[in-house]
Image 1 (cartoon, rainbow, N blue to C red):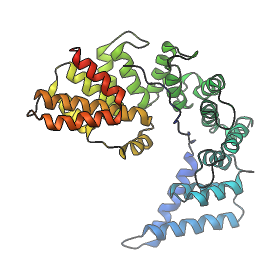
Image 2: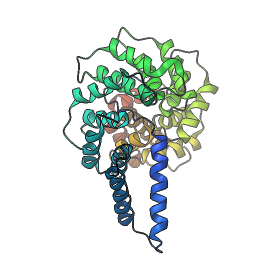
Image 3: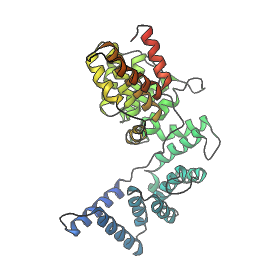
Image 4: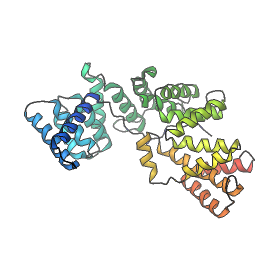
Length: 351
C-alpha cells in the first residue's frame, strides 16, 4: 500500500472571518428575538437580516458590503454573494479574497481562474494588518493554482514554493491544509519532489494541527513503514482516531488491519459500516471532512472487500457467498486497483 499521493482535485481554502461571523450571528439572533413569534420562519429572518445589512450599506458602513456578501454565501445565494463581493473588492480585502475564490472555482458565475489567481496575488502583495489573516490561505490558493496548472502554466516548483509559504514551518495559525497537501505532494512516486521523509514531517505537522486527512495518512505510513519505521501501535492509534473523526480511508485500512490481526468481529463491524457508503456519499464526505475523494473511494473499496472476506469465511457472520460476491463487485467498482491488490494478498495468504 502506498502513501496518500496528491491528486489534481484540490479544493480552495477559505480564510477565517471570525469577527464578521460573530457579527452575523449576533444580528441573526437579534432579528429572531425581535420577531418574537412562537414559530419564526427562516425566510422571515433571512429577509430581515438582509434589510438591516442593506440599511448599513446605505448609511455608509463599507464593511457591511462584506458581511452582506458573506451572509449570501452562507445562504447558498452564490450569485448575489459574488455580485456583492465584486462591488466591494476594491476597498475591502476580505471581499477581494472571497471574490477570488468564487471566480477561480466558478461559484455564482462563470469560471475565471486567472482572475481568481490575480485576486490572491494582490492580497499577498499588500503589507497591511488588514490582510494578515488572509495571506496564508491566499498563498495556499496560489500554490493550488500552480499545481493544477490553471491561470498560469503548471509548475510543481512554484506550487511547492507557495505551499511552503502557506504552511509556514508548521505554524498552527498558518494554512494547516497546505501542511497536509505538502505531505501528499512529497509522496508522489516518479517525481523529482518525491521525498517520504518530508512527507512524514508535513503530515506530522498537519496532524498535530488538526488535519483529519494527515492523521489517516500517518496511520498508513506507520502501518507499512513508509517514510518512517513501521510502528503498529502508532498505526493503530492514528487509524482508530482518524476513523472516529470520519476519515473513510482510515476506516478501510483499519478494517483491513483488524482482519489481518484476526480481530474478525471488529473487522466485520467496521467493514460493514463503511461498505454501506455509496458513490453519491463521496462528494458529501469530501466536503465535510476535507479529504480527497479518490481516497474516500479507496477506503470504501477496502471495507467492501474485507466485509466480503468475513462473509465468505463466516467470521462473526453466517457464511453468505452470494452476498459476498455483491460486496466484491462493489469493491471493484469503487477502486479496481485496491480490489486487485487485496485479492492478491488473499491468494498469498497475507489476508
